[in-house]
Length: 415
Image (cartoon, rainbow, N blue to C red; front, side, top):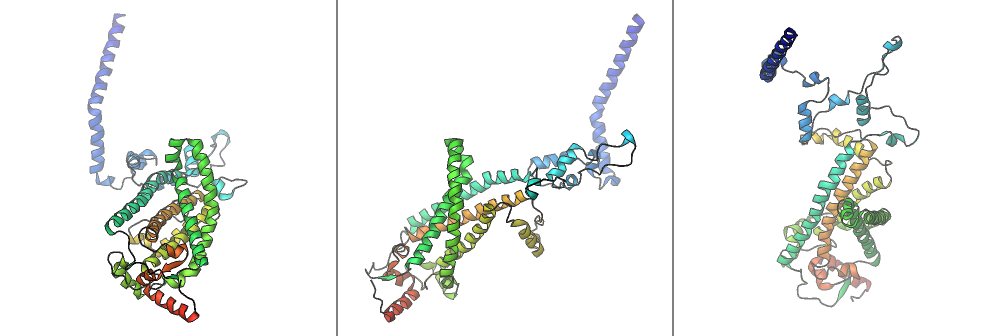
């Protein structure tokens, strides 16, 4: 018995000594092996994923945690092999795909899912790009969009404090001239009113989950957004129709010419007492007009895509055209994706819709300022359509002379 106990004790001490030596030298051995691989010129070009069977490496995981872009092509192609056939009995595999490969195929759109209804949209079971869209929507989009509106209001307030209201030099004459007819004013106000409603309801829809729900509760936010969605979807048709009408009414008067360069060079009378000559619309108003037409047209197009989900994809074809023109390469960027899931099309449409809307709202804030607080007599043009002759001569002298001559020849008296 004593001999057996002695043998067990000696064996235990031997094992403990070997383990200690391994612990002391193991880290150095591993490090030495890694350094040897690096120093060995035959190891150049070595694929680190070969050691993981094609799986992610530590570098991939760390890069993703640091929000860095990685090449995940090594994962996209790992979606399994076709089952091996012609093997007898239990030697045959039950399938050529593992669970991870099946989920990977679903994620990257290489699956063979078939649905009885819903088309390609219903085939998408996993679309991880939705989280990137949600993060952008609740983060940079809201932050920078609201800062753009707030920044414009601050600039306008500073401009008013420094410049004050642009007055009618010499005061009003009391005699007016027709600036805009009723149909022109009505078209303008339908466009303006619908855009204001769309802007308010759009912002509420965008910030509801982040600001309204935590403050007033989810039920209040849900009821509010149900109403804003109804208003937004239906008022949009008035906006699109009036946009077309306004374009037809005024496009001929908003073609840029050399006179606009002089207006811009002299600051349009906004920074001094000198007012350059102008036709029916000056250069500043032409900028507003084309901003409304181009941005409003883009809003309408993306809005239609959102009103009819998955029916009007816009971005895959657009990206293809941009790639064919070589534009991404000019800026050192990778080609844009030509294949987009239906959900990705909707996410891009919503993001573009909101970005353009914020830009247009910031521009319209400047237009509202000039037409109301910033310039004496300007609101009358879209109020009752009659403007004081002193205002007309000061801001639109060329148009004023032609209008006065035409009224005199037709026998239309000034009011």
